[in-house]
Length: 164
Image (cartoon, rainbow, N blue to C red; front, side, top):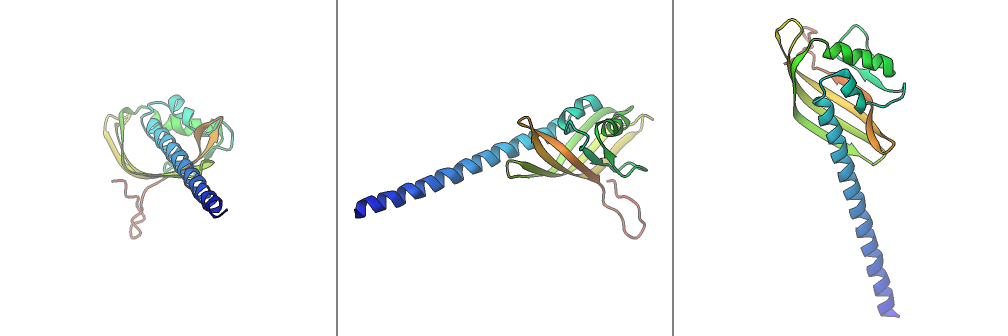
């Protein structure tokens, strides 16, 4: 009987280790998938291409750095914001300076610092470093951005954005 009890304890420990390992692998897989969404979105060159990575419902929201509108809610408004952002831009490049992803398998959080360079509609170079925070969830097994917040630091003495 004593050997049987030891075997049961051993089996229970093995099950716990396997379960924990499976959760870690799933989280790692989801983290990689979310990072993939972030990188694919960053390499998009049109609003149509970018929209693939956003939630397909009217719950989708972008809090963008461009004004005067504070937020863009719903597919139509988000698409319009993205079209405005891509309008006339050439040679778009995005570099991730930092990317952190956390997920529990149901919700995902991606926080990054990115450097955006391009040639603007006026032919002048654009060079902006910004912060981006995305809240994602799964839609039909695919990670989609439900809410996105883009910001830049502000010089508190001048009230001006620090875009560099």
